[in-house]
Structure formats: structure tokens, C-alpha cells
Length: 147
Image (tube, rainbow, N blue to C red):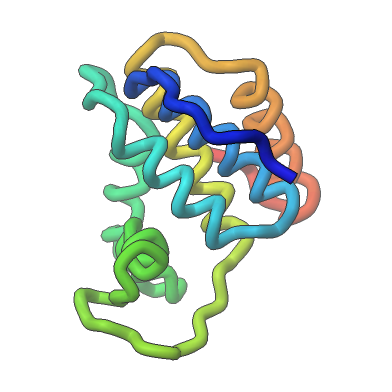
């Protein structure tokens, strides 16, 4: 049972951190839809940093011919947009079924963490721990070298 709701004071940095932490917890539980939505919110609420971060690299990679040829030619925000608005490629989807790859939720959390770190030159212990876990998962379980 929950506690009695009370007003809180917050700001973009704190709200983003809480959203990213929530996304991480959802990833560990396999709640990928929730994780992507929270990570997207955590990324989008932050001020735009003056330095490049992971989103910029993902955007560039998503339009590369190698990625398109390998069948990965979806736009970087497609899953987030579908989960928030029910649209895919700008069209309402209705009750269509989609498979959300585990990598998608991890990518969103890493994107949000990357922007947070770029904006504030800092990250939380939870963020650092998640990044270490994600790096190990990518290299060990998937047999890939992380970016």
C-alpha cells in the first residue's frame, strides 16, 4: 500500500535522475515499455548539453547504409513514439503487436544517462552501475563490443 500523496518540489535534474533510475529498475524487471518511456522522459526534460552525447551517435548510426542493409533501419525514436503516442512512422497503429528488443530499452537508458552526464558532468551510482552491467551484458551475453 502506498503513502498519502503530498506535493513535492523538483527540478529538471532531479526529475530526470528519478526517471532514469525508474527506467533502470524497469529494465532489470523486464518491463521494457515502462523503461523506454521513462528513459525518454528523463532524456527529454534535460537541457541540451554543449557537447555531443550518445543520441547524436545513435542518430548518425541509424541512417548508415550498413545498418539499413542489416535490417535496422528504424528511426531512433520509433519505439518511444509508439509507446507514448501509439504511432509508428507517423501513423496510428491501433492494436498491432510489436516486439520490443531488450537492446532497445538498454539503449534508451544509456541515451538518457549519456545526456545527463553531458549536461551535468556527473552521474549517479545507479547510472554508473547500470552502464557497467549493460557493457558486460553486451559483450558477454550478446557477444558484441559496446560502442
